[in-house]
Amino acid sequence: MIAPRRFLPSISALLAFEAVARLGSATQAAQELSLTQSAISRQLKTLEGQLGTALLTRKGRQLGLTPAGEAYVGQVRDVLNRLAQASALARTNPGHGTLSLAILPAFGMHWLAPRLRDFSELHPEVTVNLSTRLKPFGFEGSPFDAAIHFGRTDWPGVDYLPLMPETVVPVCAPELLSEPPEDPSALLALPLLHLETRPQAWARWLNALGVEGKPPAGMVFDQFSTMAQAAIHGLGVALLPTFTADPYLRAGQLRLASDEATQSIGSYYLVWPQGQEEPAALKSFRLWLAGQAENNGKRGDQSDMRMI
Image (cartoon, rainbow, N blue to C red):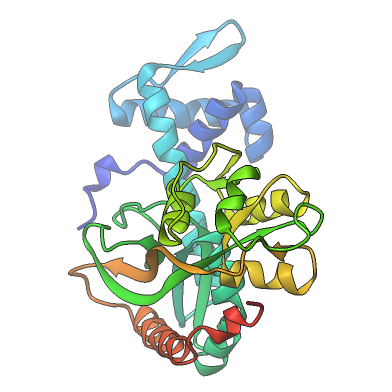
């Protein structure tokens, strides 16, 4: 149910307020919005009257925000951005399904993106929009219909479609290591690169091979792509998923730092809000993705493991 109209400011008033808050000047806001300064002032006065609170303060010739204005402007920008996105989608894809998917960068780039052409050919009526999110979030109030999740089934309030476990391999620049050592404990003498969301990855990988000892501290990255670039430039050894490592290994930019590959600490899932009616676009994508995951499992992930 939409809120009563008396609680809904006009778009013009919100645009005027956002511009003044950002620019600190009614004159500059008027120029940006192609309005007169008096029109901007009227919009601001109407908005403050409707809310029953002051949003702006005058500091000489500059306009500043009151505490209420500071709290309000962030929400206004979020609403305006979401409205603009919805309008753009309605214009570019009228009468058809749209799926907004939050993805993990490496998985999206190296595993999902190469397969999306198949989905587009099967479902030309669905437009898939991709945006990066590194951690779980609340679907309520977000623009997303579904997300790719790595780890365990610990995202509250969602349904899960298992996709595949993550298998990792240690890689480094050819100049850093001429041959993989027979004993994987030799890697402890090299600089190890770490991923922010996998703080125990090296410890688990080494322990699975019977190697005791605490992995040395090293550079920490928030994405596999930047960690891979650091490894390419000789800054250390990186643990990368096989689907991420594969193109760099094929190009000769990286080499295996060990002949061992072990399963990592989690799996990839498609997740979507629990207890809600499933949009047609999401259902089509979910069923297609389940087929892709099944085929990937039947191959034993050979497409990602050819370089091992």
